[in-house]
Length: 220
Image (spheres, rainbow, N blue to C red):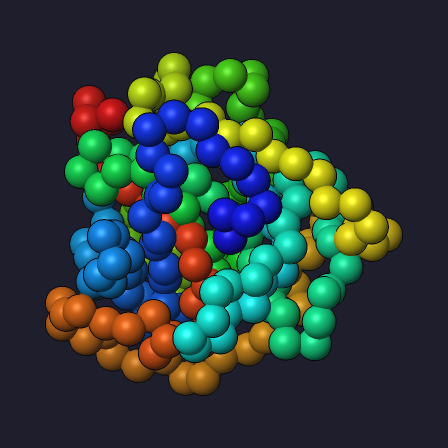
């Protein structure tokens, strides 16, 4: 997903966080390894650069993505195999700079609801929200992340700023913040979460790349 924007600062390659809607398990890809993790209590998010769009992840191939900033119309689908996704940047001391996204329809709808609460309550576009990571929610048979904004703080040094560039000729008609994740693919019946272990991202076709972070606000 990094082909759609450039980054400034020391962290050129954020860690990648995924969430399995079938099991409710979080996984972090860091330094070439992917492991199940326990989410930190809090992270700080850069929601002003929230992105939405499409991606295609195939085993043995570099991911392809077409993303736009949240306030742009949803881009047109690049190809039949592409799935809706989003990208959220997060940071905490324990896990570092990360990006998180998913192809799960239920996860997308949960994130859409959470993000709209941010748009309605943000004090300005400068301070960034500290977000509590609460126990997973449920949407029918599927698990979804459960985020809650607890306060706003000055941007920590570890949450590097990025510049987003528009992608021409990709947008389709529609309101930027409408329910754009409502028609995403359904999933197989959830399974019981497994114990902590190293995994291969190819095992989870419903999870897209994107990343995460951390703990209490005094950790930022």
